[in-house]
Amino acid sequence: MFGPGLLFVVSGPSGAGKDTLVDALRQRMPRLKYSVSATTRAPRPGENEGEHYFFLSRDDFQKRIASNGFLEHREYNGNLYGTPRDFVEHTLTEGYDLFMKPEVNGALAIKAAFPDAVLIFLLPDKFSHLRERLLARRTETNEEIARRLEIAHSEMQYLRNFDYIVINEDRREEEAVNDLEAIVRAERFRIHRYDEDSIRKLEDS
Image 1 (cartoon, rainbow, N blue to C red):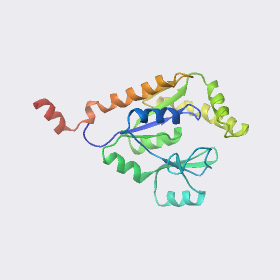
Image 2: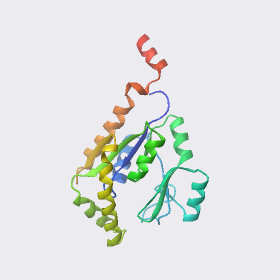
Image 3: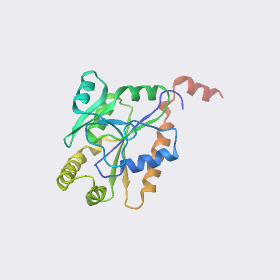
Image 4: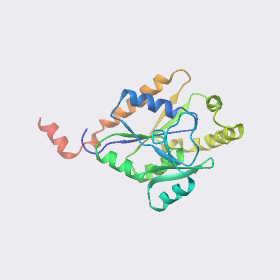
């Protein structure tokens, strides 16, 4: 590949398995970079600052909004989330492919800012599995889980705005990772991603 890196945006309802699948893909493809989002929610057990999220107070988050420090930001289930602008722009300019995992509204905002971004909608094979996965986390109250499921239903209306859909079946996560890897490899070799000089070199070789 020549030129800037590619931006892959994996989104979908909470509980669809975004964290697990993207982590597995990065193990296979270590040159993929991951864009760490910022949030005002409290860390869950096992989450580390700067690795899973940048955990900010609401005041600090609002200051970064005012200074145009986020590529996009939104409120989800009572908490603020945002994509730090500097890291994304620098990583793509350096030629690295970049993955991020925003909520659905955030994914659409990123597409508006970066039209060449590749949007991937991740779903379980059955909607009922979302509740089971959220319950298995044991990190949220029943009221919070119910609210996430309401949001998940509303997010489905945006499915047609995405470029790809990947189904994450229970106990068949490896197949979903295979699908993600296939998308990355296919997108890297699309003709329009090569500049004219590169095409000429291939023609003259």
